[in-house]
Length: 398
Image 1: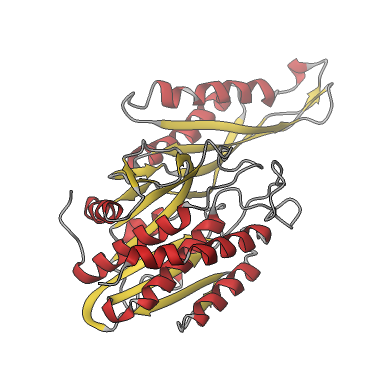
Image 2: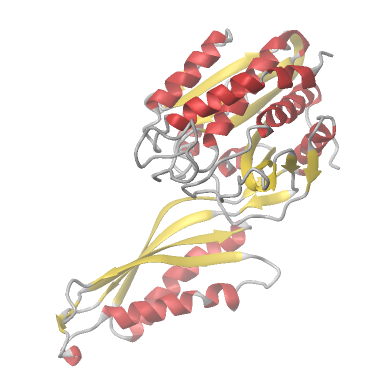
């Protein structure tokens, strides 16, 4: 077997260059045309035959091994950026697009996946099976995974397993977080519209004020976690936005509140979404008002299969400079969950923080950055796990 560590380490300069180029040229969800073109060019240069999907915003490419037999593995990387104005240290690779920034590490996800493609292309004679690279748009809006599934990325040939990673600034560079079961929560958007009856602010008895009703709904929703969810099971219900009224002395017709729900089991997710509508409806009806609940974009929890977790842990153990940790579950969401719901997979964390260098800003923060020393480690872990899966399929759970 070739020296995978040396191969991954030798890619460091190109990994950094790709990540910095992508960081300077971020694109929002559903508009990743230049990003997809960059990825397409890189993959074609490796001799692969990439295809664009979703109106040119997504890229898929298969790397077929030269050894007979083997298994089919999907490696997924998300590629979109966030509507944030970058600030903080004056980095040479600062975003060149005002108000748009890679503040969640997707630029690094692309770089690592391209590095894995390059490393495995060099090992094609030692590779059995097929590795399908999926570069997915619109993760930040939970709108990219399902369209790619609908366009057939899981079939022809049928995918048997899936891998992905997420840079995590809360872990130091060199640390790899691998967890059995749910690592990220479900993530759903809800909107509740309270319809009352408008009127003069000085004559509230002649109106039906939706503002105090909405206030009671906000408070009551907190009991869905504190009094209806097991204390041994984490969940979140947050109302992040309330809109109602146009003048200080006018009672509005309606109030709209928008929020998010997070849960680590499908059952809790479904129950909370159902109960939000029931609670809002019940409180509004008790005052003679009406409540309508609408659900926006969402995705289930990100759940790793124990067999694939064992495979990734073994890859970490074989990777020089990598330190394995078992992280606590995190209440962020990721629509990679839709791939992992269809086939056994593992989604793991690649530490990217560096306290001594001041790289400590959290994700979705305008000063977010990462220690680029993590990039070759991510490539090596992913490549080792891919080779092992394509060779032997599912290992025994560890």
